[in-house]
Length: 401
Image (cartoon, rainbow, N blue to C red; front, side):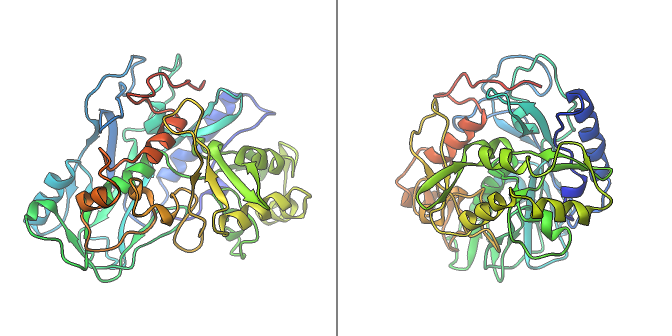
């Protein structure tokens, strides 16, 4: 799938919000018809529960119940019927398990769409559909049939795990899957399939950042700064950069000073007036990079590539009141939407960008201190901050559509 920045609608302050929603929906429909680098797996996050997370009706404006959080639909195109059975039983989830015709590629997961809502601080941000359906909104947006799109490679035999920042590709070089239902000891060169699926589902739930180098890479230029990948540039007009809800709690650290992602987004939105027209995308990029605000994009890149310079500060009413260090390797491999690799042997191992082979999900939990779930306290706090309801966080503040 190619970069999305030039076709993704975010917001405008010169047109009405309903017009922005209409333009966003139109462009997302166009993107759904665009040829993808991968076929997408179909995973639905309707009406179900894992560990502490509670459910919400898929469309109705009702209070959440407590069932399984994930409801999934499996399509398996592997010629190995036994392998298909393992996938279905092990992950207890329906997804597309097929040969991706690329031995270096394991899988792909992404929220099916992001919906523009107004947060309680009066700032408009993109929320993943899976999260939006948890809110009791007075007006319901138009939902896609599925909440999360994911695909996993049935023909993969690889190791050397890497992840690309925007699209969450998982890459292995020389490795086989291990399934718990095999009832055999995991080998030193195998990865636990279930652990991989759980990791990807965290991204599908919305642990994704819109900060990227797409503004420049869309023009095949080197990255000199970061902006939001989902910005509103439509018919040669610019209407603004927008955060994902995850980004609201991200902080960039420079010279021991913490700056919020929201402040950087505000500054970058002053680079060009809302509604400014351009003769070409190249002219738009040049204008943004020539502005006084580009220094914030450069600063964001510096933090994203400097150790210990990215933090996630949980919302005040969540179960954790300390900063969470995020991964700051950005390109290639890691990204803002992973916790630091330093947490790989803690209870929050699931959200690190890389894992050692030969370790099962259960063994990782033990190494991390026998937390009650593979979704550790930091990960849970991130989900709560975004707006997911949990047993210890039963009344999140709903945004407005």
